[in-house]
Length: 109
Image 1 (cartoon, helix red, strand yellow):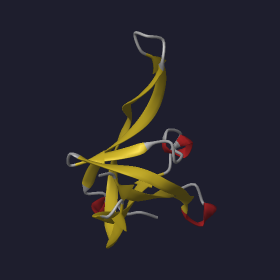
Image 2 (cartoon, helix red, strand yellow):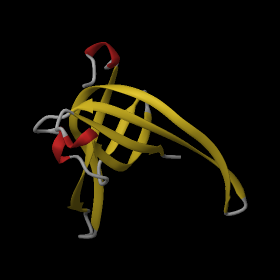
Image 3 (tube, one colour):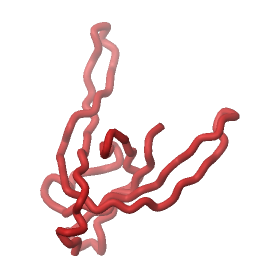
């Protein structure tokens, strides 16, 4: 069980909404789905070459309490934390006990 004192950080969980622009074309926008307290743990940082440019990628996980809102989170959602944005790569229900979720994320660039 995640202890309250470890939930020191406030994160914003954002969901994607589909709409149409003025020309009738599809657009995506993210809006706040939930604001939660979380434990945060950086996992690794790595650099790689993409389009002949060095890119960096940071992996991080966010642990939140499981509830009726967080149980709906999937990889189409994203996390906003300290003006940084993270794509959710996977959602793990720790030990399948419906007590805590680990959101495995990669920072957007």
